Amino acid sequence: MDETNRDEMQTHTNDQAQGLRTKFGRSFRVIAITSGKGGVGKSNITTNLALTLARDGRKVLLIDADLGMANCDVLMGLTPKHDLRHLLYEDVHIDECLSKGPEGVDLLSGGSGVAELTHLESEQKWRLLDALDPLGERYDTLLIDTGAGIGTNVQFFAGAAQDVVVVVGPEPTSLTDAYSTIKVLANRCGIRRVLVCINNVTTMAAARQVFRQLHSVTSRFLSVVVELAGWIPSDIHVEKAVMTQVPFTTAYPMAPASQGITRLAESILRRPPETGRAGGFQMFWKTLLASEEYVT
Ligand SMILES: Nc1ncnc2c1ncn2[C@@H]1O[C@H](COP(=O)(O)OP(=O)(O)OP(=O)(O)O)[C@@H](O)[C@H]1O
Ligand SMILES: [Mg+2]
Image (cartoon, rainbow, N blue to C red; front, side, top):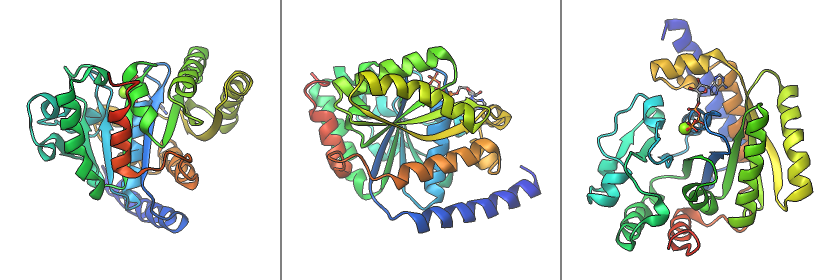
């Protein structure tokens, strides 16, 4: 990173932190990020959202729950020594399974070789609960990259989060897959509000157009409120940052995509968490692990 970029970053970071702090109070937030189709930008959005919220002073735990395909570590240039698999199956202490990311963000990586969480034996379920329960004192924000699709892991995490953000790309397949995902979230997970982030579009008008298309079908056929929470422009800096393993909001704080993430963060925090789901950290885990429907 050159000198200008570094100064730019510092100024931007300070402004951003100040801006978000004065606008929003602190409240505990659990936000799951998902999508219908794969490859639409979830991991990049989750990782950079985590960093942006951390710059705002929030204490963020990022859980990469895209089991088997976890890559938030790569995006942050981390090589976790231990991950969820070690926590669940090898009795490694939670503190050793967390990796320190930039801006004080902690990462619990999904790792590979973890079975669907719905298939956890009760010993693992309780191990997870015991390990994660005390973390509520350390963090005020939990971000979860659930992976794509309507698999049980996605339902498992999204069903217990206060807010679910569905990332949608501009391709027609992304739209139809997003619709199927929202349908499952509404019908099987009891989610009443879904936030949408349109990614990889050229203009706000294009983002609104994609959202309108999605909204026209969800409002006709599903009993769920679908709101446009943000849009991220198609931006070469995203790819450049992926290549260098430095998140784009860190490497290119003024880039269009970074500004999109700031707007998304503001938009999410501006909304009160979905009613009835604001149970705090412990409640999140208890809901998650006690859910008979998903954990049998
Ligand atoms: N706004 C954007 N502008 C340009 N390229 C983007 C943007 N968002 C994502 N990409 C590109 O798309 C690729 C996939 O992004 P990412 O890995 O975040 O998607 P994903 O939804 O997490 O994928 P998967 O479903 O496989 O987990 C990135 O490596 C990047 O090259
Ligand atoms: Mg991903």
